[in-house]
Length: 114
Image (cartoon, rainbow, N blue to C red):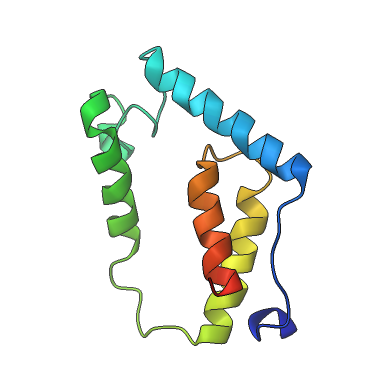
């Protein structure tokens, strides 16, 4: 429970930084080369065969966030929110998601109270 009580700060190791950068470069190359990859350059579910134009990819990702933010109930306590942020950073730092380093650092800054 101490993780949620501002007792710790998160910092990425160089290994994690490198893994996140490599993963993001892969996503950037997929987009640049106009490859068709589920959820990156296509829609989801029944829209999996719908290729999304490059100028709409940012909107696609924003819509994914919006779709997952609906109907989630009462806001969590600050302690629980920090714990969930820490868990999410841990998963994203493995370098398997394609998240941009800047976005991951925004998660870390939120956890660290910056």
